[in-house]
Image (tube, rainbow, N blue to C red; front, side, top):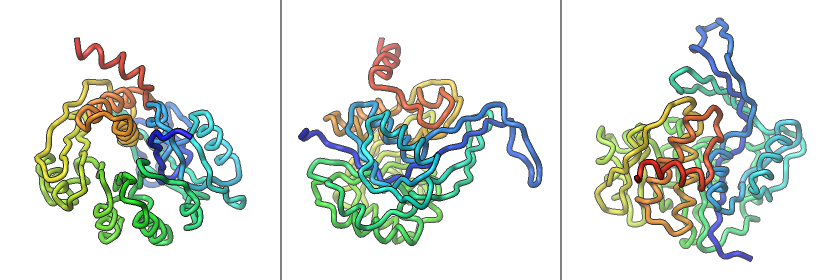
Length: 311
C-alpha cells in the first residue's frame, strides 16, 4: 500500500447540463443555446484536477442508480477516482443546469439526488489516515440534514489529516456557526475574493486573507482573485500576491475547483504553498480557455504551457 497522501473529496458529484447562451432569458422568456454539454461536474471538477496531477483521489460521496449515476461512475473510473461508498439504489444522481453567458459568467439551477443521501456510517467507513487531505465544500455544510453529520465527522478526524475548506458560491446560505466550525478545524481555507471579503468585512483581498489566517493557530489561507491570480496568507503572516496568467476566457465554470484540486495535489507532492499556488493559477487559466466544467489540464500540459512564461 502506498503511503502517498490521498485526497478525500466530500464535494458532491452532479451531472452538469451546460447551455451556452447569448444572454439570460427574461422571466417566461426563451433563448436558444448555441452549444450544449452534458458532463460530470460538481466535486468531480476538483477531483479530476487533482488526479491529473498524480494524486490518488477518493470520492467521499454517494452515487445512485440511473443514467446520471452511470455517467458519473464511468467518468470517475476513467480518471481512476475511487468511489467506495455504497450507492443509493432508489435514487439517481442529481443535476445542475448551467447557463453560460458570452463573458464566461454562469448561473446555476440544481436538483439534488442520491448525493444528498450520504449517511454517517458512509463517512465512518472511510479509511482516512495520517497525511491524507480531506476537501469539504460549503455545500456539504449548508443543508441541515447533511451538515450535522459532516461537521461531526470532520471534528473526529485526527489532527495529522489536512482539512481543506472551500465555502463555495452560496456561502451566504451557510449557517455562520457551521462556517465557524469548519474554519476552526481547517488547515487550509480556499475561497474567492468575494467570499473572503464577506467573511472578514475587509474590502482589500490581501488584508482579508491575512485577517483570516490569524483566526486560529492552524489556518493557512488562499484567496482566488480571478485574472489577478491569488493571494496566500500563511498562519499569522501577511498575504503574498501570486500573479495570474493571461488567457482567453471561454467558460469559468469549475475554475475555482480546478484551482483547488491542483493546489492540493501540488501541496501533497511536497511543493511549497507559493509554488503550488502559481501552478494552480496556471492550471485554472488553462481550464477557463476551454468549454466545459471539468477541463483541468494534466500536469505535463501545465509544465509545457508555463514554460513560455519562464523563458
